[in-house]
Each structure stands twice: as structure tokens, then as C-alpha cells.
Image (cartoon, rainbow, N blue to C red; front, side):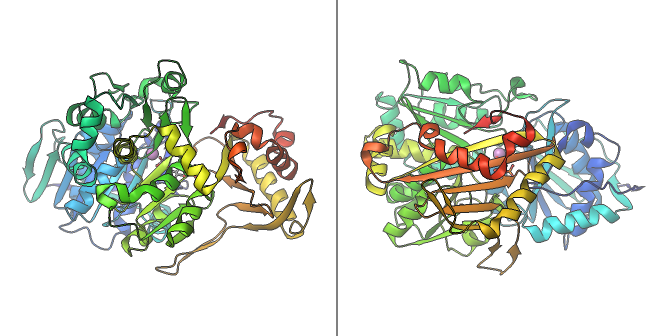
Length: 544
Ligand code: VG1
Ligand code: CO
């Protein structure tokens, strides 16, 4: 195999964020941009000689072209085996599973997740390590360091690989295996959940459902699993064909972006269960007939009911949630007498806890839940968990949620996002918040008394590594909380996220609209951060 060494210059903006490197497609299409980043990753790895790499993406614009380039760079860097999803497609959780199942040295997942796709939209690339999880910070810091000193990359001069036929292709000692993207993942789900019971309940009509794949990667997975294996009617999966631009929408499963599904679930024709997933298949939104389950509540409900699911019937070791996620799961952990960990935002912080067996379930408020079955959050897994729960209990989504609140209380929760904020203004807001932190504890704001105010820092209990500046937290005596963070996945300006939470133990007051129940906390957040005043905006871009 002929290998070419190409001289290159570093780019100064290849610092991975919350979940890999995300930029506009046009940025990735600049000469050498993708090549540099991939070579920087390979330069950071201890040994690529003879190694096996999993490769696939969410099918967004530039996916195929990027895969052909990566194959050639991987071959030139000594990888001996590539496992690639047919058509270049793999959901993030399926990629995680393939890495684990094949004991690959790692994987590259091409996705910008819930960000829009298309020639003028976003592309992304993320490296996962041998446990199947996103590369921890010590890796991503090294990728960035290499990207700043890179002077050349290696590329094999070989023909494009046929991505569409499953099977093996061999070029000298370099082997490429094209696999069906769904097969192994569907097998894994079948091992965890009670498929015969779910199928019976769906076929009897006791569960009716709609799954919105948002023209993204979960279409083929949901068609196979929900319609074919579990017997849901054809058409139960909507927007099922992955499109390079996701049909022009944001493949972000929330009430704002999955509007078609949300409208259906709050109509008189609503099925008993509704769900959606995101661009790369790791997020989920759960709905019942006229009810939306917040991701934080979903995690808590899963933890409280895990013993009803075959894959977790021996109980769960512990749970973890990202810091801004509501404290609902903490209450369940306390009742079950298991550990509950609070980690920074991003799935990479759960890996060590899962590997060490300290936790079984984990989740984030951003529509992400998962377990020790892979090392990524997993959208369809969460959907199947809920379907199994409905089938097993015979209850409706609404009954399950209300009973949970009655037992544990409700953490009324909302996140307000302000997108594309001018960077200088955003930094000013954080400076202003930071200045106030020392003087806040003990201060009264109407009925709220500040209990603590700090900037979250995390020490990993397994390897002792420390991650600082992970968001500003202000907690109040009554258990209410607000968190301010800057997004690490956006590609335009700064996205400021405000997370708001209030505990309600009185069942008579639990059924309130979150925005109304949180109104005084929302006002106080504005008073403390002045985002509306400083940006001149009068509402958040997205409320979830
Ligand atoms: C967001 C979410 C975070 C999630 C990350 C990746 O990050 O808040 O919880 O892990 O996206 O999800 P940020 O830094 O923008 O807040 V995905 O589905 O984009 O891989
Ligand atoms: Co995602």
C-alpha cells in the first residue's frame, strides 16, 4: 500500500468540546482540516499499529466523504482492521456497543448530534476509547495539543471503499468489515428487555405508539426493533429515513423541535406512548397521552423501577447524574440506599463510574439516559425501557409519573437556553455572576435564602482527576436551585443555559405548569445574571 506524507499547518480551533469537535461543514471542508484533526487523534494514541477501529456516523451531510478520508488516514497510520456501519451509518450507542463487542481499540463517531445538518450547518467528530465511551479529558486535551503542533499527516493512496455492501474487503494486510448497523444493537436490546411481553402488549392494542426519528439515525433502528421485532403497526415510526439535512429541522428531541410528535401527543388522537431521538441516536424524549416526562424525572423513574426490567432485575449498584440534572434521582437513590454521583455535564464523566461498577444507571437533563450496557447515552434503550415498564405494570405513562411524584415529591424543572449570544456579552455575564458568588450565601431574595453559591468542580472518584469550572450553582434553603453554564457543543457565538429547579412535596401542588411554578425563580435568575438586560432579548431561544 502506497502511503503519502502530506505537509500541513496547524489550525488553532480544534479544541474538542462537551462531545467532540463540532464546527460548520464549511470549516471541516477546508483543505486539511479534517485530516489534521484525525491525524492529531492518531498521534495521541499509544499504539495504532495493528489496531481495530470502529467507524460510522449519523448520516449527516459530509458523512460519506469524511469516512473515505478517515479510512485512508487510518490505513496509513497502521490500523489493520476497520469496522464500519453499512452506508457509513452508526448511531452513537451502536458504535459504543460495536467497540465493546469487538474489543476494538476505539472508534470515531461522525456527528454533531442534535445540531442541524446540511452544507451550511454542522458536522462533528468524536473519538471513543476502548470501553466504548467518549474519550476522557486527558485524551481530548492531548488531541488539542497535537492539533496545535501538527506538521504532517499520513494518507494511504487506495481506492474508495464500497460502504454499501456488507462483508469484508481486504487491501494487503488492511481489512475493512462493513456491518449491518442495526443487527448487533438489536440483539443487545433483546437481551436487556422483555421483547415477548412488549410485543404482546403492543399487539393487543394496550400500548399504541408513535416514535419520531426526526429524519436522523434512529429511523432504521426503530423500524427494525419497534415495528418489525415488537410488532408495532407500520407507520408507528415517523420521519424514519435518515436525510443529510434531517429534513431541514433540528434533530433535537424536545417539545420545541419534535413538534409533529408533541402536537400529536397533546391531541385527542394521542397514542398511549410517544418518543423521539436525536441526530445520532443517543438522546430520547418520552411522552404519554397528554403528558411530557422531563428527562430528569425519567431517570428517577427508571432507577425506582429498574428491578421490573429483566436486564436490571438484580437491582442497581448506584446512579449518577450530571450536575444541572434535577435532584429527583437523588431521592430514589436515598430510598434504595445506593450511591448517587454528581458529575459535570457530558457523558465522558460517567465512564469511570460505569467501568468500576459504582453505577448502573445514569443520565442528564438534556434528554440523555443510559446504563452499563454501553458507554454512551442511548435513546432507543430509554424508549424500550419505558415500553417494558408500561407492559409490565399495565399502567399509563401519566399514572407512573404521578405515582412517582406522590411517593418521592416532584422536582419541578426547566432549562432556558439563550443561543448565539455575543461572546463578549456572555463572558461579561459570567464575570458578573462570579463577582457575586462570595457575597451570596445567607442573602435573602424574597422567600429565597441562598444556602450555597459556587463554581462546580469535580474530582473523579476512580482516577482522582479534577475538572474545574463546570458551571455556576446557586442553591437555596428550600432546596431550590439554579445553575448557569455555557454550552460546549454550539458552533455560533455562545449558548447560555440556565437550569431551574424547585422541589414540591405536596401532591395537590405537583400538577402545575413548570414555567408558572418556577416564575419567581426565573425572575431571580434574571436579577442575578442580567441576560435579558445585557443582550436586549426578552425570551430564551428554547425552553425545555
Ligand atoms: C449538551 C448537553 C449535554 C450533552 C451534550 C452532548 O452539551 O447539555 O448534557 O452531554 O450536549 O449531547 P452542552 O455543553 O451544549 O450543554 V449530544 O446528544 O450532542 O452527543
Ligand atoms: Co446526541
